[in-house]
Structure formats: C-alpha cells, structure tokens
Length: 338
Image 1 (tube, rainbow, N blue to C red):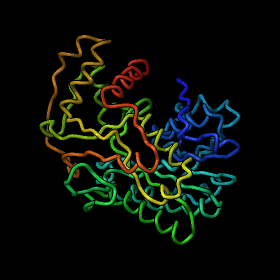
Image 2 (cartoon, rainbow, N blue to C red):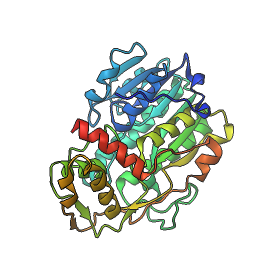
Image 3 (cartoon, rainbow, N blue to C red):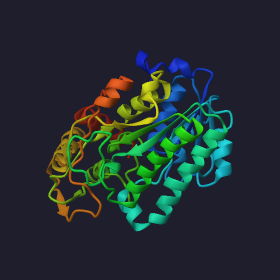
C-alpha cells in the first residue's frame, strides 16, 4: 500500500500528535484512505464500521499498527457511537449510505443511516467533548439549482431522498454548534474516485464500474447521450481537504460547509475517452470497445461544477490532481487489483 505522507505545512498534522482521530466508515473507500494517511503520520486512529459497504480488506494492513483500533459497530446504535467516541479528540464522519438510486429504491434505510445515524454520532461526539466534528456532506444538496459553478451559500430543492438526508446533516451540524458548542465542518464531496473504490454491486460509482467493464472487454452503458458532466474529484484531493478541516486553526473556517472538488467538469463521453486512453496502455484492444446508451436516471442532475474558492481562501486548499492525473493514478491501481 503506497505511503501518503503529508508534508505540506498547511496541514499542521503535528497538531494531531498525541491526539486520537475517529474515522466512521473507516473501512470504506474514502474512510480507509483517511485512516491510511493518519497512520502514515503516526496519529492514533479509531475506525468504526459495520461492513455493510466497507470491506475488511481495506483496513487489514492497518491491524498490526499499534496506533490503529478497529471497532465493528453501527452508527444506528447509539451505544456503538458512544464506545467509538471514548477518548477521541476529533471525528472524521464518513459513514453513510451513498447512491441516489439506492435512496430512491429504499428511502427508509437511507434515512436511518444518514439522518438517525448522523444524529447519534453528533450526540456521542458532544457527550465525549470531541474538539471538532468533520463530516461528509454532498454535492447532491444543490438539487435543482441550475447555476454553475456551485457556490456554498446557494442551493436548490433536493432531487432524491439521499440529497435530503445530506442536507439534514448540515442543518443538524449547525444546530449542534449553536446549542452545544460542538465545532463542525461539512465537506460537500463532488464525485470522488480513486483507489479502493468498489467497482462491484448494484450501486457502484461510474468510474470503477466503467474501469471494470473495460478490463473485462464489456461495453459501458452511459445514462443519456453522454453530455451530462461532473466535477470528478480524485481521492487525494479529498484527503487533503479532510486534513485541512481537522487541523485548521482559522476560527473563521469552522462551522460552515465547503465544496470538495477540483473545480472543472468532464462529460461522461470525455470520461470514457480518458479511461480508454489510460487503460489501452495495458491492453490496446480496449480502444475499440464501443459505448452503449440508455435513458437518464431519475434524480440525476445534468451538470455539476464546483467553485472551490471558499476552501482555497479559508483552508488553503490546493487540489493537486485534475481529472487526467487522477484517472491515470486510479487506472494504474485498478489494473493491479482487479
């Protein structure tokens, strides 16, 4: 597993020495990358996961690390949340049920995990006197607001049960700061991709799914004509934002939400071309695989593009990976691991 050492002085991870960080959903895609970064910087790390979507293999290399503690538990169980928050200084809350289609198919479970589970974690963090609660918010909160780029203080109406749950998270975080003094930072993720993102299952994200299909010489299926666009965001940019949010000493940067993105958009047709280009370095025949199309999905927004000016100003965010560089890194990882 590659070491991801944080050397940028803006991170100030030395502030976390002798502190303990809880990563909920730490066996998942984003969570395991956060655990890896913390451990590589010798920071005590607790992982809470129920393995409903997270995988033991994602954290198996950490089990021998004396700074790592794995707790198998569910954020829907308040006792599990209290146990995980014991002696914890900071929380990186990543545990959630993602996917717009999943939330449309099963809104009750999505709400139970993303709203009730989130509230449990806030209560447990409050009771444990956690110093800061950084949580995964979502670009889906922008809903039907059409203007681009998306700026944090202008949102529309949610277009899915998932989007509603992530907006409710922001409302609860705001109330817990005002009512209980718990400092929070919300990170609105925009289409994150990269190593350890699961390509399998009914709700697999588009990039790992397409990579797996290309490697298996199958035709990826695009919803719509391929003109829909997204601000695809490589995992290392997301790790950077989490580390900045957890360590910043800028009081003005707390108790608000940020877009986490690169600040550029790519259509689905452009995405498949990039994937073909980088995968064909391993297998030339992938260049000739055709793309298929079907109707657009319910709840999908046509275009997504983030302004990252607020994060740059208040957190010194400086995303290192554009879509091309990120795809190259991701493809290299998947080719070795699929």
